[in-house]
Length: 452
Image (cartoon, rainbow, N blue to C red; front, side):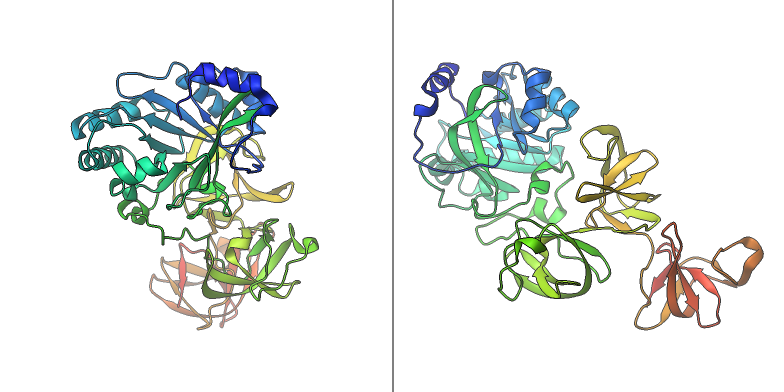
């Protein structure tokens, strides 16, 4: 990650004469930015946004040296909506100095970062001492944050000095400029001379795409500021670990067939005309294949596809939504400008579905969030259970008609009452209700009833 500025200038002078051993075409950059790139301007960062999937920004060169421009650059990333991770070029020489290093790194880092990286590529310690120090850094950072922790090094150094400790991290970022690494990795720094026209400089660049790594994480994994799951935080990764795509779709949801999809579940080719379209999911089944734990059946195509090849969105009005994870609110429908407000995981909000290009968003009172079903859950049941029975979770009334006006109340049901239902209906605003066997109507809201 460290290349002296003089070398950067030399690379720029050489320009197109540079020949890399590894030939890779990157559709977008994941650049490594440090003080060697200087204090970035608003113009540069605006331009960088269209050229980078996300940025990994150096915060310090050990505990004793803070990068000159990291704070200014990170403020611009936040301002212009560029996701970024933060890295610590470590200089610790023991477990105690590793702890100090981690504390200073966390203290200095911008808390809008998506993840934290230990850059460990030089040491005077023995292999045993180095592994202990890396693990001490990890343990201290895990006390300070629940965000993703990434290990960075080049292959021979990683296997020699951190072969045990690196396994605790949520992902591994491996540098190898001559060939693809042969150890497990989720991010590959394949070059130190990728030209970014926005900065007019050559930078280190990395790949995270499924065809480039051994353990794949989607772009959303790298750019999300959400905490890693407790399982991912407490268990070590290995070369046999697979990061599965969202695989909890349900019948009735709508799925966007991704442009990157190539094969149906039966192995036949997906035509280009079928991609980048929305389809209703009419059936689901559990499978374990590639990066999927589920296959979904798409109405219209009448084909099964793996869950990794679709992105589920709420389509049509659903009224109330419950957040599956803490969510940032954005002031614009394209989700590029954060308002500074967040919605709590598990909270329920009234929202309106809107479309932006090919994608759906949910407009709440304070801003927008994505309309992906993996981020929110519709707050109402959408189908009659096979048992035709629901149970009240709270005391509630049935009504003579679907307007649910107080004057039309019919019967009061205490919490725990079982009710037989025959059908489900929806209002223009998206809320749902059950029709009972008695011909009355009750709410289908998750917080008030449960299915059996």
